[in-house]
Image (cartoon, rainbow, N blue to C red):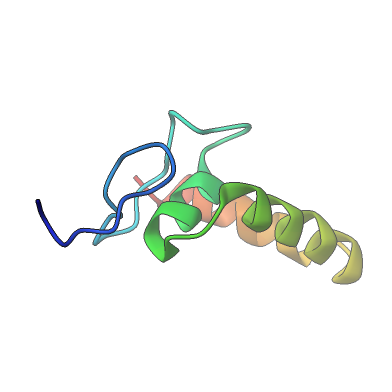
Length: 71
């Protein structure tokens, strides 16, 4: 048995950032961030939505930039 902490879906956490197309709702950015930081993707999605409203759209631009640059 290995010492690797597994994600809820059974996959090990990633050591590098990649878009997660399997758990994607739009582009896989939130799923990729969740895999990289080993947290629930729904928390990241909620954070982006709240951030988009609070920052008047800056979080949405950051999401778009990550989607275009990553992978």
